[in-house]
Length: 213
Image 1 (cartoon, one colour):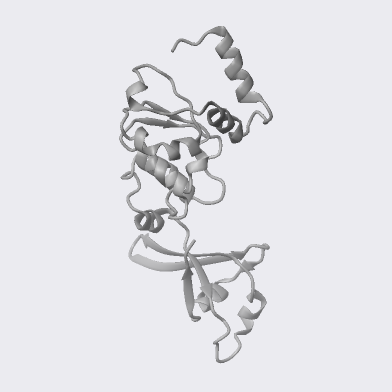
Image 2: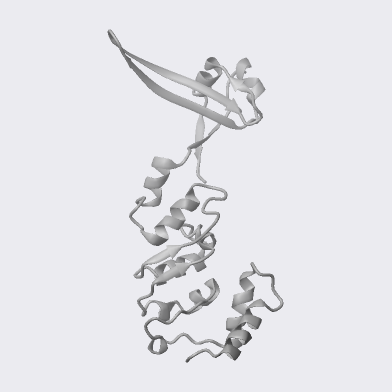
């Protein structure tokens, strides 16, 4: 249906009324009021369709039937698609899997590197491999050392009880007249306390649990 200047003004009013310019509800309310029904037989080539994430999830069966050229704005709303609890993102990802897509976002990362994994997986599931492979290659391992079961106190670790921070262990190979292999330790707490080599080494005498994230 051709859009007249009257319709354009009406749609502009509907899209801006009662909501701030950056509100997702702004668009959802307009679609809800208009009772839009996405029918693949009524979608013609070169037509532009705009919808909210909630609308796309509700019409996912229809979306799968159409070959789209997609632009997904505010794509960071889908960044946690890798989590089983994010039903909206997961449904939309499946619905648009067959279509080429462009993701637009000003904040691809907010809290975790895993969010980048989630966004990239919407475009291509095979770029980073599965979740386990991505974590093993790029994610920081979090270890929780258990000092409570220690038979005797370790004085140099006492000041570190309850603290969090960074601990790095690297294997260094030096080749000159002969090959030397050294293990380098370094560490610092989140409040800025530097750890000496002996403190770093003694941590590995304690039981530790790898913490998932």
